Amino acid sequence: MELLILGLYFVCLTVLCVFGLHGLLLIYFYHKSPEESQAIEMSEGASFPVVTVQIPLYNEVYVAERIIEAVSNIDWPKESLEIQVLDDSTDETKELVAATVEEYAKRGFNIKQIHRVDRAGFKAGALKGGLECCQGEYVAIFDADFVPKAEFLKKTIPYLESDAKVGMVQTRWEHINEDYSYLTRAQALALDGHFVVEQQVRNKAGFFINFNGTAGVWRKECIEDAGNWQSDTLTEDLDLSYRAQMKGWKFKYLNNVTSPAELPAEINALKSQQFRWTKGAIETARKHLPAVWKSKVPLIHKIESTFHLGSNIVFPLILLVAILNVPLVVIKNEFAELNDFFMFMSVFVVATISTFLMYMYSQRDVYPDWQRRILLFPLFLAGSMGLSVNNTKAVLEGLVGIKSAFIRTPKYKVEKAQDSWKSKKYAGRKIGIVSVFEVALALYFLVGVGASLHYMEIAAIPFQLMFFFGFGVVGYLSLKHAFQVQQ
Image (tube, rainbow, N blue to C red; front, side, top):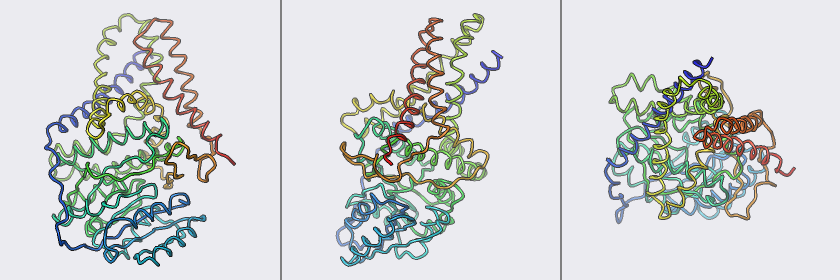
């Protein structure tokens, strides 16, 4: 039994270390890749192509008006701007959108509400339906939690106009309510790592990147050529991105052009979002990785795509490593002959170091006060561990092909410290088995801390405390936020 535990632990850490080394590879390309070329600006007297802005909505009563207003404020001639509000709502959002659309239509905007009653294909189905009747040569997409800047189209369309093979331009997400709580600050750190390092490095190095579902603009021809929006995965954006790039379309990521968005303010909304993203990525990996490896793209592109699409496999491994960490404390002290094995295992700390470096560079790249921001890294790391139960469930369902509905992330228009989500609709009241398991694991790791103290395994205590804190906080907040929802 001891050898079985050691073997399983070693395999899990080896895979995690490989993903950690991949992080170092991204950092290498981060330094090696050339600086972002000078921005392409719209020239004086340039024509304004017709652009369609799609706003997919489903029961977004708190933010529907905000996103419509922001899109209407985009600096683009009215005669060249079409706004589609793709509204699948089943509550009062439908009537609110209808009144808002009517108001802006009276102001001279080419805006329409496209309402569906069956939600077939969920977001992908709504986008596809809107594309069938859109007027624009280019299609920008903004989810309801975004507030696009006025210069968005003038900063992105020139890249599509200057190169007919560019199929999509993605902008970096900013965070409206980053300072609302430690939960939103940790989310901001995580997203910055993805955008500032992963997206920027992959794009500069010529690897495949992904449209992030919002805050980007597509060439309509590219969407249609790649097979249009499809709903057989929960990440229709990642799916279409790979189909388009496999057909030879180029993508452009703009790190210096940003689009503000509202972060989930309560943890059950975050867990729902993380579940969808994690499961959808695994579904997309199953769908596309065989084709990627059979294609003629360079070997390094195939390897990078495997890490890109398969990165979420780390969550079950993180969970296993955490659970096995407690019996390993006992094994190490009961079997002295295994000391050399445990000394060797210390090399796996490289995974943590590479992760820290990636997030440090992401903060240093865009924030003057990056030293203060990176202090949140331990909180982010503990939170990532705490979310591993939720995300492991998503990975396993994705691997075995269990299908589930597209559960959208609720938005509450939480922008300032005094804003509250507790009395608003859509907040989750259900206490799931995942939350109970998270609390149980926190107690389990408290026992692990006791075992480490008993055996004087001082080096193990920080890890046990991090596991305890991560699972404890995620589980506690999940229960607390569910109980705080006002009936």
